[in-house]
Length: 208
Ligand code: AMP
Image (cartoon, rainbow, N blue to C red):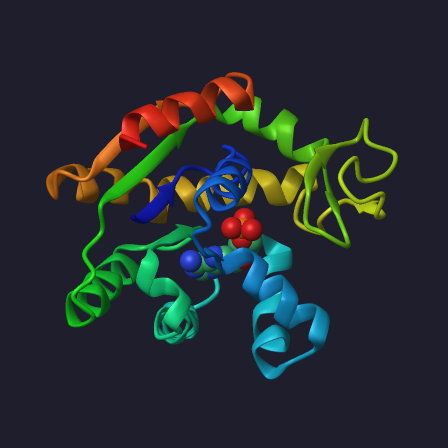
């Protein structure tokens, strides 16, 4: 199963991806996670990406397309993949199509998790993540419920940056919904519900 997850930052893509990955053992390709790892490791990519990420702006297309293209060459993606946070621009979507057609591994679905922007602002400003295992929780989690690791707030989860990320989403990424609808790949799910309910619907919609 080759899936692209679409939706605004904070819509629940990471949460739903984590569940699909666990249940179906598919590689989770999250460009945000890959960039955060590069920032943490202080690599040239991380140094280049950090200022864009801190402002809530998009990292340039050529950088991110190169990163994903390389990742798709790895053998674990042959059994399928979940792309989370990519593509985010039309240029990225076109590059992905070209790469997947070269690899003869077309997309099965583009899953849109739809959530109202004001709900997202509340969600993201109270979101906390585990430093150890990446678990996504909230300000109510003193430590990670999965591994007892330290919970932290992402640098870009403050309100001003969240609002900029939503503006960027609306301008650059939302048009991809029509793009994938035109390719007859779009599956839309209401994400403003309990994650378990959303997940059940995701599986049903994907025929899993
Ligand atoms: P995320 O964890 O998906 O919300 O991504 C965090 C940040 O990483 C974004 O606000 C962007 O600065 C950057 N980023 C992640 N994925 C992409 C992408 N596909 N294109 C450009 N920038 C990205």
